[in-house]
Amino acid sequence: MRYADRMSQLGTETAFEVLAKARALEAKGRTVVHLEIGEPDFDTPAPIRAAAIRAIEEGFTHYGPSAGLPEVREAIAQYIAKDRGLAVAPDQVVVTPGGKPVLTFAVLACVNPGDEVIVPNPGFPIYESAVRFAGGTPVSLALREDRAFRFGAADIEALLTPRTRMLILNSPHNPTGSMLEPKDLDEIAALVREREIFVLSDEIYSKIVYEGKHESIATRPGMAERTIILDGFSKTYAMTGWRLGYGIMNPTLAKHVARLATNVYSCATSFVQRAAPGALHGPQDEVRAMVAEFRRRRDAIVEGLNAIPGIRCAKPSGAFYVFPNVSGLGMKSAQIEAALLEEGGVAALSGTAFGSNGEGYVRFSYANSIENIREGLRRFEAFAQTHANVTR
Image (cartoon, rainbow, N blue to C red; front, side, top):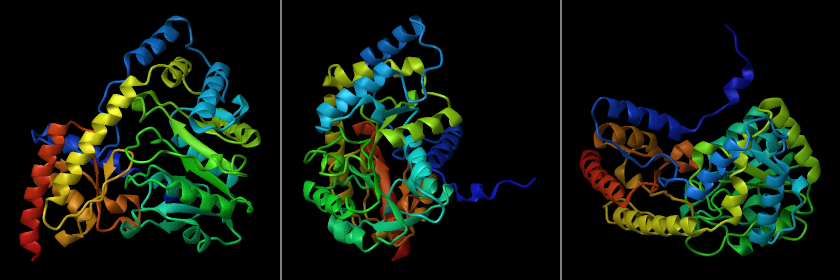
């Protein structure tokens, strides 16, 4: 049978592939330390769970509007106004099943075949996948270790052409944990606001910050109309399986995105949406406790990695990933990913799963217990010592 050519343009997310391989090893009796998947290992807070159960009992088990339930859009608009200092109306909010539809639909609505989209490299692999699927051309914005995986307007300006249609930002950043500083955002905004360029600002890790303060480029003068904020509940509230995200965008684009939603999935789940207002506007004690624990784990994994000969690891400012430089092992990143799982029983991701500039790095998620992280470090150190001897 023949399939559509466009399927060759659609990528994947390696974390789920490595997770499947790790589960297969576990099914054979092997023990695996899971440092591959970007998922908080905490339970969804009880009040959020209770709100969803209550919504089911109250009959929120039917279709809702494609852009989201009105009261949920209102709650999200109020939250963004308070949290980001950005005036937002409910008609600028689209509620989606997870954050990925915001990314994919924004690209489909804004990017024509042949248009160029500047994407971070290394970066979340679905950025490039969505651009290619829409017929666009991803243009790599190199993030370098010697610059703390940050970039500025000059880096972007060098990539601009008459075909540039969108710039994708992600801060805090997956996979490096880096954050753009306020001056970076000022410079970037000054560069793009006079051009016909959309900015998709992926802010899904906005509440998992250890140093500095998260800011959105949408707050800069002239940027609200052209910025699409991607955010959601998966990371902040440990709600990955609930599939609940949202986008903030200008009202015209919001209508386009809602129409795409109608065509693809009709609407986000009604009773899941009803849990959103309480999550955003209720007590945040459990979120703060989770972030404090992530900070403790971050410090432990960074210290442990830097103690391994041939490995160096920058301290991330946000999210829950480290991106150590493993070039001292003399192996390709993909080889390390495969061998570390098979020989060492540690599931991690090759840096190249996030783009060509990830060569020489691996990504570890520290969304796991401190005990498992220490066991993973012990296994990785043994692996590194073995392979350092082999490659000398």
